[in-house]
Length: 426
Image (tube, rainbow, N blue to C red; front, top):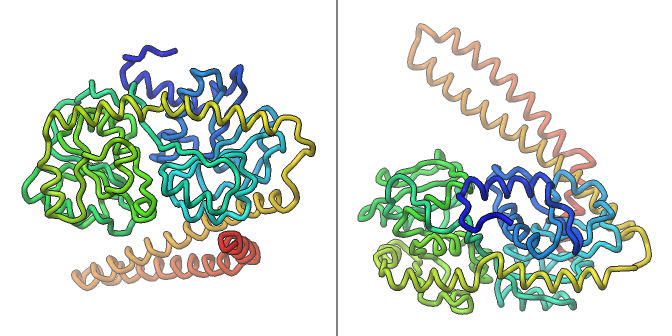
């Protein structure tokens, strides 16, 4: 067992070791987490949640490993006792019948509730009472409350970095305007705001905000520990069921005040005193409430109730029961429909990836084409060369556009897309 006071880089090494499969054997059996990737540096939130819980399940005697999306089209090994699905798109067709299946609904609650194979799960965990009630409407099995949490050995508040930060957010930008983005513009008029997050180059925000690009998950403990205030921004599908982000627990465990735009669900977490906002003026007020006693009280609640050690203790009983129920079940597989659906889901994913590659190529060439023509107009001496380059770009763009059309019109793509839509409608 690692020293509880290990520095962040030692914890990062442990996370990487779990992701690499070095801890997959345990006396209680093996738990595999179905996740988007096993690349710890990819910035995928489901991976860090899975690894956080896995780390503490191993201390209870479980072997743990990741089962990333690029392996979902292959059979789960027979020695895996439980698969915990972190993502609603995981189709459990390639699990042995004796392998238990648990779904962890951390977001996209309505999508989970409408899965046509929800009855294949031996248990479902949800991040809030509202999500639990929604799942229970469609699922007759055990639905237990298990919010995400925090690893206090990583987010300890000890590593405060090289310089203090007044206000920080670590929200990624995926192309859609979020509630918190415009509110941060207003806050930046009065406070120093630092923003870490993916795709910041595409954000059009206040010049007063200090955009620093993507931060590694293992850099976040120092970022949060150095900040007076951490601004959280819960997306609408999560706010609808009060399923809060890891940022809430990580920031508070690090000793910073967290303010969020989702007041629902805080009371049941014991965090009802947390400041909340819904627009710019309310964010300014919420961020001003940096009372040290309040911060310490909220931090104590997180460390007492919301660590992954606590989550693992709760999950352990469910995992044991799920394994016991599945043990000795006859039959080698989950049936022909789920097997077919699992393979079809992977074919759809690969076709969508090819479509996205070609679509990105078309967009990129269009941007370069516009720039080339603009250069030609600005500089008559280079017009001939610029026109020649534009002709090449047009030809390449048209080739990619044709290929994109072929991909989206292909029988494989259309069949897989219809299957996916039909499964979500059921």
